[in-house]
Image (spheres, rainbow, N blue to C red):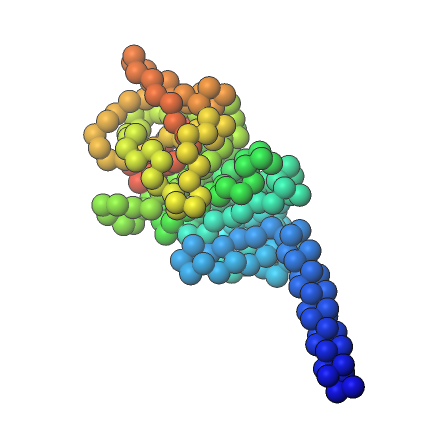
Length: 235
């Protein structure tokens, strides 16, 4: 009898544990997860996102909800149930900034990819996004500086002005190995650096091609911006 009691008691504990685990798993599946890049902590929107009509600088807003605490080096992972109705706004890191710009999420088939990040930067110049002024981030570090990554443009063509410098080095090596996008033409990229190349042109997102103002053309796998080397960018 004692053995039977312990066996049944153990089965009840195991069943309870499985039920709780299933409930927690189902809850987690419906959340929009965000991870702090510095320490790998994963948080969900129900705990850290609040409805807030005021957009504070140095913060992410997701569907007009402000992420708290205000992050640096934050990446957002989008599950399929929210990807089609998601608008992400990156807002400048200076306290007196009141502008931002938008990142369109990848398609539902690409929801396991990171859609954006920015590093510890201060504001420099501005760019125009659909007639609205936005913030250009000026990295404070020197040498190898963390970049802003945008993995899909919201418009068909990216127009680059003022001789913004670019580089094609390390095309597929600038993201974490487990998050490497590779050469996906649906997520084209343009890369600013200080390597001395000064070519202006525009980016054709549909073709995944950066077309320069002289005879030169290359295909890319994702979009990156190192804004400390850029001046004015117009979409």
